[in-house]
Length: 116
Length: 115
View 1 (cartoon, rainbow over the protein chains, first blue to last red):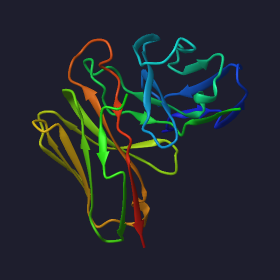
View 2 (cartoon, chains in turn red, brown):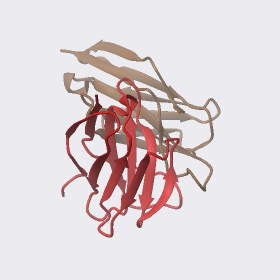
View 3 (cartoon, chains in turn green, brown):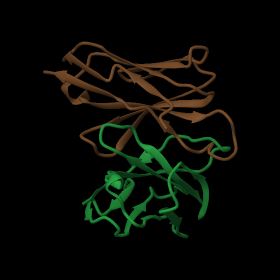
């Protein structure tokens, strides 16, 4: 079975632009989460979606938004890019909500975003 | 914000030696997970230990959890050069409701295994 896929792998943008990152979960997984990883740090939670509904949101500004489609794939949008948005953006999928608890997450390879 | 803090930040050992990494966290948890990351790419899940478990094994990995001390350790036995990577602990909060689905990661331990 294919793992979590993300596109694009790399992206270069300039300040003020907008970016859309895409994620396809493992087949059968209904939950998708997004994480931001700045160089030298651990991943930070941005969003979690289950059955097309937002179920969790981290401490990120409204410039960050996401959605999940009927086929459970997901997009992360970031508007008005800042230099500090440069990071590795990771998508993770899991089977479901498991009673409201974060279970094992299966991560994609990430999209490396550079904002100039 | 980072919930878990790994210790040490970096560890260099010879192939064949054991590697021990520690993780401390601050709030109650439902479970604690360890992940490995090679060269800044995607994370790979290693092991999950629930708050009512004290020890868990998977191959050459041994994880312990002490909820009274809010700490966990990851032991890799008989290390190999291929174990060179960054290792992160991540906690799932113990309280249900908003935010209960997110994992909170530490800053990681960078392990180098010298052949």
